[in-house]
Length: 80
Image 1 (cartoon, one colour):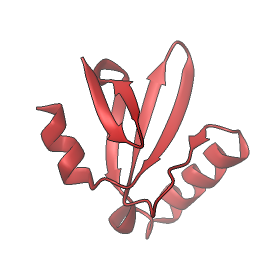
Image 2 (cartoon, one colour; image 1 turned 45 degrees about the vertical axis):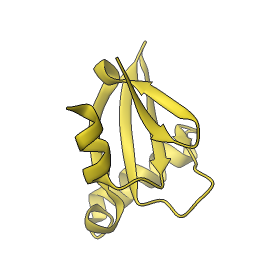
Image 3 (cartoon, one colour; image 1 turned 180 degrees about the vertical axis):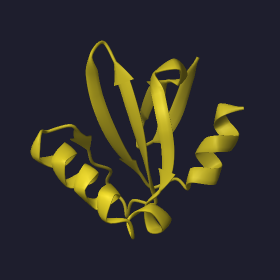
Image 4 (cartoon, one colour; image 1 turned 90 degrees about the horizontal axis):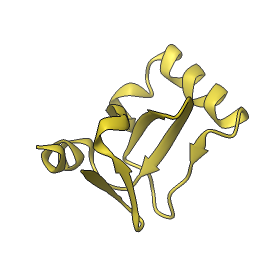
């Protein structure tokens, strides 16, 4: 199955490592470092609107961070 994450994008549910709220997690120094490192390595897929959450995936040996304008609770509900 696929999870629609907005902006006409979808990811495989089996590849989702985690769904994180950007406001709550960005206060952590480790999260900011993780996002900064992912951006410098070209692993971040941006969204067109103001991002509210990010989805971390791992598939075929490639990690990706998808920024999304959907809230983490909406994405969690879509996973069920």
